Image (cartoon, helix red, strand yellow):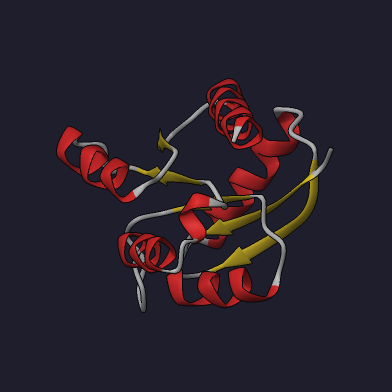
Length: 129
């Protein structure tokens, strides 16, 4: 089964790295959508079938935390898992994000193996529900 994935990061380079790493890791990708900020991501989420979201925290217009809060308010977080990908890795921040309902946290820089492990764990959880 191929997954429709949304990459949310203000850096086109980072979105490209995640996309390439998904392929290297052997994750079956159907459609790959990209957004430069949380506001663009929410528009895509309203109109497209998305199985998994990768989101940065620090972005202009609407940051990742605000996007996650809006997804939580709309009930999207219960159906669409979010993996936060960020350089920000304090235990306080991770706990804050976890309390909002994110499924996993991946710290930049990451390896294809680390990405694959996190994706497999998150998507297994999704199928278990």
